[in-house]
Image (cartoon, rainbow, N blue to C red):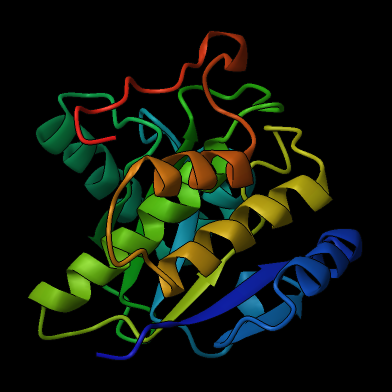
Length: 213
């Protein structure tokens, strides 16, 4: 099954320039300097969400204006039913919109509540979760997601600088396209060194050597 095409769409020219730099050379990517409402074709819109499914501000509010209030109710019900009222950062759920032209959103928290997320890896883990959720959907459902429209993650309320947000998003996409073929500590620490944030690096430690090393 082919990987979905990614449309990075945002009205901020500086963010789109950062996308151009960070995603250069990666396949299946289109960058649109504008609003997602003007993108003619996409199957799934990414909602850069909070953990409680409250879609009242920013891109989320625009998503509800575009798809209708019933989508807000559907998202809230899924958060209550699937996550007991709090969808963690690092998860993403595919929700139907009832719009035949744009049938899905990927509700993807970048923060628990509206707050800055600078100096975190939230953008990376949100992007990674979204890509995995789309992949899982396409493996299970007859109606697949072929095109994903995604805004800048964490760049508004989250206050993540445009180059850093673009870097983390591109890194997640690059790792999604090129997964490891085996797992060991070299892979794990290499991945962490690439991401460069998450947890308290002062408290990190190397794993104990096995008897075979």
